[in-house]
Length: 479
Image (cartoon, rainbow, N blue to C red; front, side, top):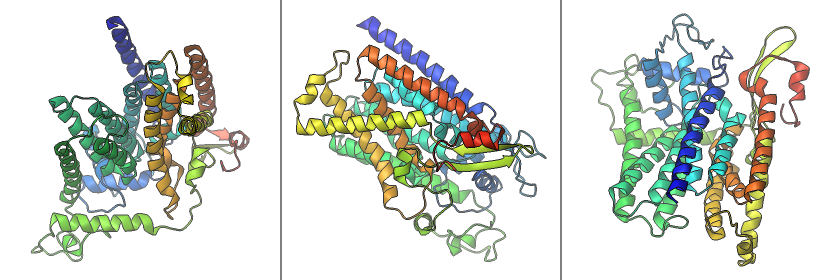
């Protein structure tokens, strides 16, 4: 058995290296194209400029991703200057370096794929199935496009996946050991980071908290109350520290300060209400007021948007999002169109249906499921169902809240939920006999590669004629 474990470890190392190299290549290829800003890039770039110039700003989402952009980009050579135009993204444009901001997003996205592989291995999936899950992530344009732009989504998914991986490691550590406490701290920190990027990570935080407190799927016994309190205190402390950085970086008045208390604005240089004798409000007052304003801003928008879509459309890849369009020459146009890989969408949809059917059958006929026990897997059918149910609830926790919000939603809001669908699909595939599994994986990955290559002009902004773009709109709502 020793040589078997060593072989598995060496295979894992090779797969991690390959996945990281593939992820970097897919994201850094033509990263400076398009040279113009895409979608919300000017918004986030302006915020980065504000942070580096210590200008006050407000936003509907927590500030960690923007602070990360600012600090890392400054280290890489980013040079903000609000007096110069913000229309071009290149390595050097009139002294402004926008390219490093895209590099940051690409790096976070690239590091996520090996983590998904590691999570699948922690779920006791075979190296083949774990590799399959990571390839689903890597070959989906939805992930690749959003991690090539100056947006916060790649940071959100990275911290979400890191927290899930750390939690799985935590749940299999012996109780009352330093190893458990170490992974407890990593889990709390990663979960707090995810929430400090966007509250959209709340589903994973709730899932981890419920399992840790009630031991429903992985733990034999719940974590101790002491450990739960430690995790809560650490997560809240880091979350509060992020907002402390947010407030402490502000020294000058800015054009967007709607969410800040008037007493805080009175301490900002250049504000109409500036008072050198003013005393800033307490940190608690500022944070509570800011969170009320942030939540109000998110829920206040109820008007339909031209590119909004519904949560049930994301599951079947029904509607995309046109993020950028530009006429390259009289006959050709450059487009960045956000859409999922059709082959991957179909695979994930079918695997989810198969698992739901298995759950229903096992509930109605408990003994039936054991007739399908795979001789190639060391995991019992009961364990497979429990782990799959855990992933299914992770998917639902991230997806169903959008059914109750009136605010318009977009395809990129599906990203946190998609992680669980990739893993659930790999879990279902791993129950097949080895030969059938190999054939199935090869077929799906081949189809995914073919679709990815066909959609390359939309991912990397290659110019095409109008008829060629139209040929890629396989669904009527891919408009």
